[in-house]
Amino acid sequence: MTTVQAESATTEPTTRETFDSLDPATDEVVGTYPVHTAEDVGEAVARAREAADWWASLGFAGRAERLRRWKGVLTRRSAQLAELVHAETGKPHGDAMLEIVLAIDHTAWAAKHARKVLGSHRRSAGLLMANQAATVEYQPLGVVGVIGPWNYPVFTPMGSIAYALAAGNAVVFKPSEYTPGVGTWLADAFAEVVPEQAVFQVVTGFGATGAALCRAGVGKLAFTGSPGTGKKIMAACAETLTPVLIEAGGKDALLVDADADIAAAADAAVWGGMSNAGQTCVGVERVYVHEKVYDDFVAKVVEVAKGVRAGSDAEAKIGPITMPGQLEIIKEHIADALSRGGKALVGGADAVGERYVQPTVLVDVPEDSSAVRDETFGPTLTIAKVRDMDEAIEKANDSRYGLASTVFSKARGVELARRLRSGMTAVNSVISFAGIPSLPFGGVGDSGFGRIHGPEGLREFARAKAIARQRFRPPLSLTTFTRTAKTDATVAKLITLLHGKRR
Image (tube, rainbow, N blue to C red):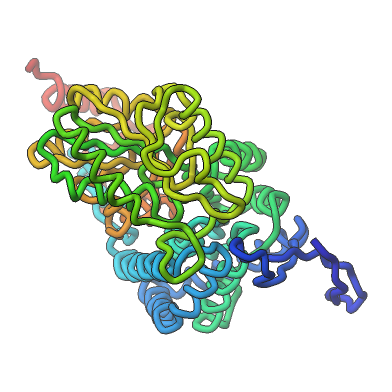
């Protein structure tokens, strides 16, 4: 980190601490950004509160029009944004473009469906309150704070940002310290189509900046990251009773039944486990395969995995590990698996380099090893043989995580999917749920709680407002001190007729 001289509002020179965003493949400086203090964050949230009132006043149609214009900017400049994502994360351009495309599609869905999901809906008032008109609508929270990850710096935070904006909120976004440029780029692009107010702002920095956002009095805080950091976020937000949405990673399983398309399942396992260098919260880390097809499946996985290579050249399929500290965790997981009897059919102990990790496929790994129990977040797979899908379900569910899962089965796919303890399951494909804007996204257990995407995602960033409007005076008035004994008796008879029958 460095410090630079900056001008304050009173024109007195102040010292502004900054930090560099680095290319993980080369350590070249991509950009330099300020370390925003608690005071800076408080001022950003104060500006957002003023902007929120204006943004909400535009209504669903006005906001949708602005979001569509923003979507157009993102689309036309997607190559530029992909280059920045590539520079800050190291992922190949194709993978960067894929997450941008998904984010654009989600933004379009949120803008189009916000009115239908959040607008006023009539509810039945029931017989006792038949004189009332009952409605519910969803009102903005005001300011939403978002703390985003580095592994998918566009797609993941946009699942909160775009939906919160569509719901009528202003947003203050704290991107990962590894990808501050991406967050700043998104906010700058939004400001081009919404120049009037500070509806979407970015604050940059480290943990202290994120903690300040938690304590700044936002209406809700959406966080994506590790379970450990998620607990710290919750503790900080608890000081002001700020509600939180937590997405905290996973240890996702893929099940392969005896009737599965083995070639498709193997391809999905390798892509789900190795794409983005394995740095995918909903990526595949564990595979449980029916004993009848185990050998064929493993052989096919090995064949496919050997065609995947990490590097920075055009032929490389995956890039570097973005966060240097993760390299040691990946190395430890592989070493633990091998020391306890596991075998590396691809990669292994030598797969972990100074920046890159080559694909690693492990078999015969004990279920209580760190490679099976803990999130590796690298291009590794553990494959285990099971006698049937009941055993596969039992082992897949024996995890403190519960984010996503995958099933390959021709006859029982949906049945097995329903039995898996996870927020999302893809059947005969991999991670497909993330590309469907109408489906909610989130986990259980140590994978967090709350949902982004879909109608549930829109409602996460709004508060339900119930309104009961009297249409005419009731024949039996219950809410008055002039209520008589006769009225009470009549109500007692009525409730008995309605609910007192023996079934």
